[in-house]
Length: 193
Image: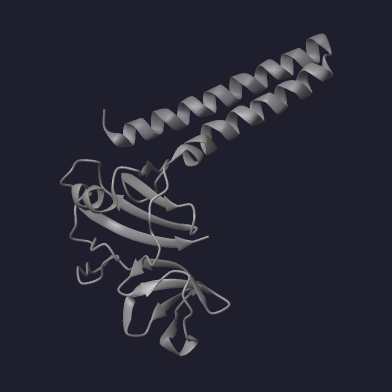
């Protein structure tokens, strides 16, 4: 089964579960007039949904990502506004003047997020552990380890994986067309929480 199909089946399954649950609650309230059952069910369902989406993050092993960034720019570091330039039609990201293929989100002169312009592909830009847009899924796992988490509902790419440094609040995300070992990295994002 291809990953795209898995994603669609997962989304449809979740939607059907929610729809059946709401229909059941509607019948309970309308037919039996059981408001307490309704409220308890909503609370329980909310807890289940939170566990389904948050438990994988809570159980994920922390990776050591201190000092992580792109092309020697680290998330969490100070940046001089003179080293950046505004991007046309974009109020969220700034471009790094010395390398405009690196986009960054800056809050109060601190780099909060780094991402790459993926067209044209520039393999000279890499993470602190040497991963670039020419690296493969296998390279990422070799350099960063097995403690990654698969991202759900990845737009534009087939697969996304994420490493988290819970102590330093750093997240590194890699995106691929598929999860085969030879699949090339299509984009990299480094985020400071």
